[in-house]
Each structure stands twice: as C-alpha cells, then as structure tokens.
Length: 75
Image (cartoon, one colour):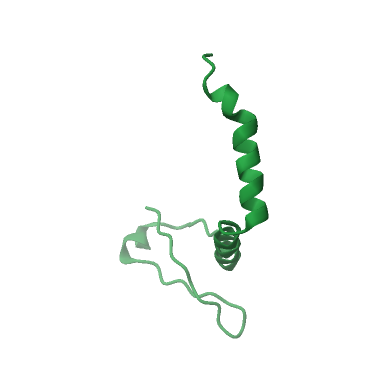
C-alpha cells in the first residue's frame, strides 16, 4: 500500500505520521522527505507570469517559426 500525504512540520522540526491500521502487520516502511512542495508553487507562479511576458512569447513564436518547416516533413 502506498499513501501520499502532505504533513506540517512542528516547532521542533519534526513530522509525526500516524499510520493506518492496515500497516500494523508491516515492520518496515519507506519514508521520503521532499521539500519541493513550496518550490513547485513558486515555479507554477513563474510559468503563469511567463505566459503573459512579451519577450518570452516572442521567443516561443520564433522557435515555432524555426521548426514550422519540419512539421510538414514525413519521416
């Protein structure tokens, strides 16, 4: 069984995980600590900003033009 949840870190920089009853037969579990949740939110915000940035949009249009002739080629 795999369970993914986001947990808050307490004031002592600890995370307390209460396992479901189904885990009582298990003697070992794998715990992965990843701090990229807030990182992902900031990256998504940057992507939203890029979607209206004139310089970024002109770069995308230029790339589309550069590769437009390839789209019609048959491999």
